[in-house]
Structure formats: C-alpha cells, structure tokens
Image (tube, rainbow, N blue to C red; front, top):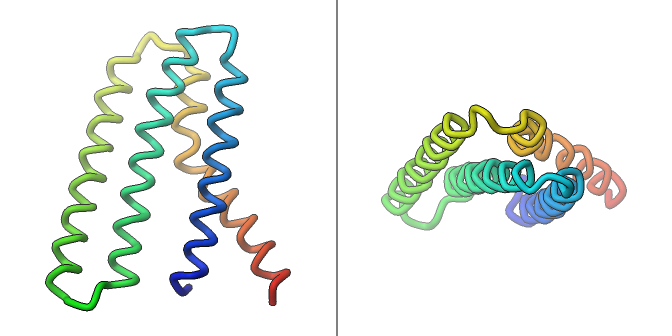
Length: 128
C-alpha cells in the first residue's frame, strides 16, 4: 500500500467514524446519560485509533531521516498508550453506565476499520 492508497483508506475510515457517531447519537437520543457515555467512550476510542494510524504511518512511510522516524514512532506509541490508559480509567468510572452505550462506543475500534477495509476493497477493485 502506498501513501495515496492509505489516504483513501483514511478518508473512508473518517466517513465510517462520522456515520458511527451520528448513529450513536441518534440511537441514544432518548437518554442524555447514555449519550454522554457513548460520546466519552467513542471519542477516546477514536483518539486511540488515530494514534495507532499515525504510528503505522510513521513506520511504513518513514521520513527521510532514520532518527526522526524512531522519535516520531515513540511519540505516537506514547500517545496511543496514554489514550488506552484514559479509556481504561473512563471504563472503570462508568461501571454503572448503560451497557449498550459503552459497547457501541468501544465497538468502533474493532468494527470501524473492518467496515472501512471492506469499502476500500470494493472501491479499489472498481478502479483497477
């Protein structure tokens, strides 16, 4: 995969994230507590996924100097671990929160990239 193809994948992933956000807000519109829980968990999950993408981008499409590659990889890995830590703290604090909101918020981490990959594969196949 080259940088142009990965940018297409990121655009698709952004669209799926937006759709997931709108769906979650619509799904939990009747309960302000569930909506707030969904937003907290979804935004932390999205930030974690963003730093994972940046980490892989740095590793697979390195800048010209090797030193900056290693430094950037460590920075993005650190931020990814911080996001996972915040997510763990948030999930621990939300023990009595609605389960559906927590599961729908954290579900994007696994399902969002899979949906994006399927859509990317369909788009990539049509352009060949």
